[in-house]
Length: 260
Length: 315
Image (cartoon, rainbow over all chains, first blue to last red; front, side):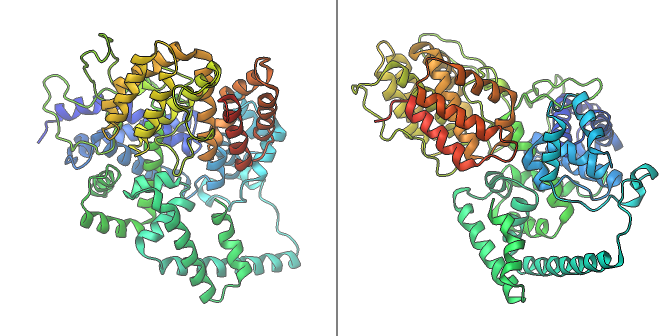
């Protein structure tokens, strides 16, 4: 069993790696500046906690760098949920790049107006894009549900649209009911897939990993994975249609996925 | 710390390809049922690809008191008994030092470092760990033999493209690495005095199945000598266009949104030595990249392939 001193030396030896992983996670999730520093400090503290418990538990079944990468990623999730609930950058924002992730975080999560967000991004050197360009980026990102109430202050509530007319509410309700119906049908159809197939779709389309990354992450050969994803989508389509979802609705659910 | 430390190591073993079939199946089933673990694991996978592809990425903000340094090689600090770790099946995750007896005429080679690609910017400009699946590495058709006529400039452009292909094929342990390295050697054999450089790539072809870190010393020499032998400008141009083609195939928006790419395209558009057809292609690429929306990737791929064909001597 390594001593505390040995674990401490190991921690210090791998601190640059840990910090780099933290930095990349922050970039992936639109954290910058003080938020990123806060997370990095918190993660370091968690790794030191309980006499370097995380390092002590390492059994050598993987490389230490990979182990630390996974541990720090799990810590990031814990940190993120505790601060902001289940909010995450959308896959669309991630595809657009780090600027879009930051923009979405500022506007959709933190409630900044576009002008404010643009100012923040320009002054931090994240972008030199014009307001118009940022507006176009934002327009391509999905509308999001507001953050959980505990994170929204009075200022942010000012940005929340007031209730619409009764007719509009009814229409929204019908749309929400319809959306819920489709979401439930999709969830049930996904449950019918084999676990590995479900995981492939989840990582590819919801976590927005490339096919190469999905292959690496699941220890699968890459080349056959393209065809396999097509097959899984076909199977999913079949389940949805069997559940009475119309072809148009299926297309609207899966169309974005198949366009990847 | 939260409970799933055991899960962390199992997931790390999965990512390193160290899990046996049965344990892998168990873990996949558990992972498929756990939203929390999937999210964290997906982040870890995405991060790993970035760490491998761009090991010198500058953080958005460095943590206070921390400097983004090249990671130290895994191993014992003085006086510390190392925790045993299974060797990673995937090359490149653990940097290690390689001592090398001379490969060619006593050339000393740099140790294996994360900075191996960024030490020579402009060759592999795209962040990729392998060639894309089904990659068409020959936009100009069959590689000519050493004796076939080809301008010096065209040969340099093709060599630049081939250097990128070989690098990525070796990284990904792609079966095409041998063929690509052989074609590189054949191209070099058409240059007077380049036999030693050609010999490097024949050697790479012969050893193509080996881990990338073992071939790195050879590739390092190749990266230095090929531009000197074939013409720096042409080789770098070919390497950049090929990197851009691969980036387009990978739908890498970051590559095309970067200042470096925009600057490169601007320089090419103003270059009077580029043939008019090539400059027009560059203009079309600039238009696609600067359109403000997502680029039409098929157009980018087509234009970049056309550019490589045009400058690499199609026919």
